[in-house]
Length: 191
Image (cartoon, rainbow, N blue to C red; front, side, top):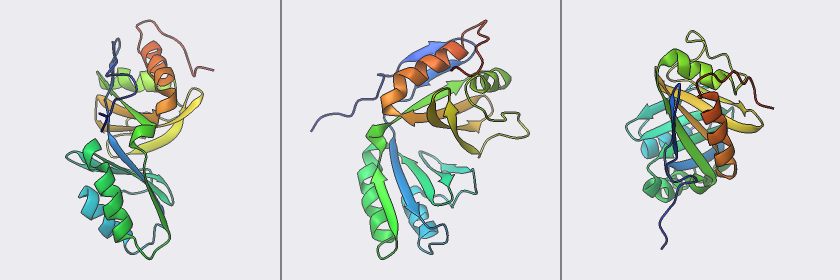
C-alpha cells in the first residue's frame, strides 16, 4: 500500500503571516437532510462533536464537523481514520437518504498563523467575506471564493486560520496566499 502524500509536501511561506500546507487530513463529505434524526448521533459517534450551527464549525481535539450548506457537512479527522469514519457514518445513517464519501485525497488544507489583524487582511485580499472580528471569528466557517477558485475558511482561534480547497488547485491557492501575505502586497481580489 502506498503512503499518502500531501499536495505540496508541507510547503511554507513566511511573510505578514505564515502560510503552511498542513499535510494530509481526513475529510468526509456528508450529505443528508438536516432534520435526519440519525444525523446528530452519527456525527457524535464519528467525530465526538455536536452538530454545528449554520455557517459554523465544531471541533474537539483532532476532529471537527463544519456546516457547508443546509444539507452538507464536512467531517474532519486524522487521515488514517477517514475510511473507518465513512463506514461508521454509512452504518449509522442506513435506511435514510444520504451520501457519505471520503474526499481526503481530493482536498488540500493550509494553516495561516500570525497577528490576527494581519491574518484577516491577507484573507480579505482574496475572499469576498466580511472578516471583521465582530462578523467572523472562532467557531464560524465560510464557503467562499479565493480569487478564481472555491474554498472554505475558518479560524480555530484569533491569529490562526485554516483554508481548505480542492487538491487540483492547491499550488494556485498556496501562491495566492503567499502573494497576499507578502510585505507591501496591495493586490486586492486577484482576478
